[in-house]
Image (cartoon, rainbow, N blue to C red; front, side):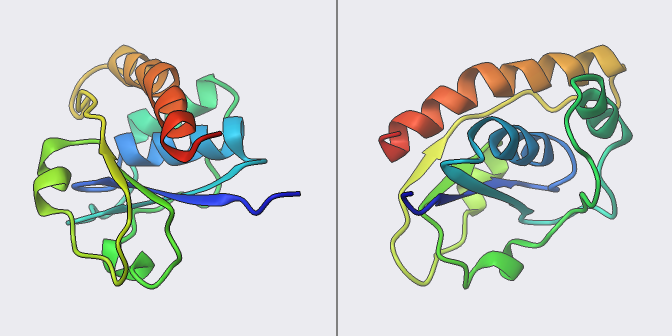
Length: 137
């Protein structure tokens, strides 16, 4: 079996979009990809709407918490995906060159659960093919 590629999903607060992307990537591509998520300025907790949207899709939410990008800087990362413009502009310099793609998603913070569900489905429909293509899967 080939070694799984590590994908870092980077956002500003690591409380919503990047968390949902991490779970979806690990669920749908877990045999080929190990997804991590982190934030430039992590929030105190994962957004309740993100947790609920994941649960509604039958996806795991156990152990999710916002992480600072500094905690993953020493990991061997094969691809960085920025999911908001701020993260793209603030993306740190990694110890070795890492390919990156930018795929912005709407921020549903403060909106009804339906917005989180819409963003979850947008992540699933656009992010999975983009990661497959970027990693040649």
